[in-house]
Length: 71
Image (cartoon, rainbow, N blue to C red; front, side, top):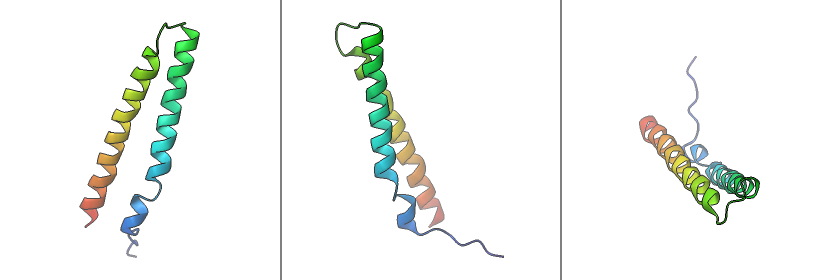
């Protein structure tokens, strides 16, 4: 039996929610670390949000690669 391929738009349909969740979680983690470690600035927010952005770019790359491989 042949497996049905998902629609191309469906691959990216939840991408906005994934990006929002990753950024929210990384910023909250940085805020928690700044508070818990009593950082004078927003160093941990900057570090964790940068790591969140890197993970978002990697996630978009992987999803777009699978999108073009299905074509």
